[in-house]
Image 1: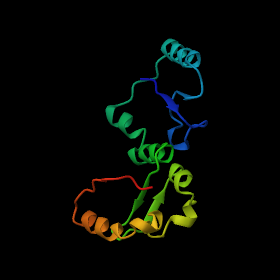
Image 2: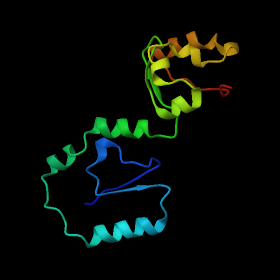
Image 3: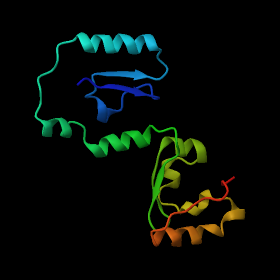
Length: 138
């Protein structure tokens, strides 16, 4: 089955170079139709065993690419609040480059008037409880 990668980025992520075609969201429907038409009329590749098909795209690489290219700010942290990962959208939203924020405590992202909420949130997360935000951070 041919794979067409449609992304908001202008270049194909390295981990996904096995896709048959790549289109940026900025390209119009004519380009998509042309790519699909070409793929439908091309000679099918030899069939791979099911296990080989599943291993073609390592899940970790696929998920990392999705996170890194997301329009949403996504980061991870340790149970004590130390930032571990930071995507491009988090950089755009919060203004910190990865080298400035990774290793720092997540509390620096919280407005000073709400800093008292951080210890309670962290305790709830350590207990495995979710956090339902009653009001957005401003």
